Amino acid sequence: MAEAAAAQKVAKPKNKALVNEDSCTGCEYCVNWCPVPDCLWMEDRPGAEHEPPIVKINVETCIGCKMCEQNCPYDAIHVFKLPPDQVEAWMPLQGVIPAQE
Image (tube, one colour):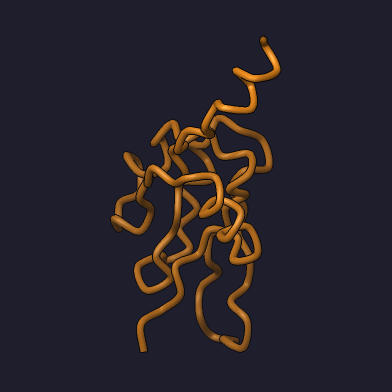
């Protein structure tokens, strides 16, 4: 009986932070406010030698607490309610919403 209930259980959407590449200035405020070790980190932008680094997000470990969103002075990070398949899709992008060209 418990196995049937587990099979019918639908995975719920989870809150996950994503960063807008166009808005991130590399200030690191979000990294300092995040309560989860190794969830947020700074990384150089590929092919942008004179650009500031950008924050990357481990969407797998992000708990959706919104501390980064609430403390980003540039409104670059937002927390979204994502279904499990979308969480997996964001993993290779490291939580970065690509720049609009």
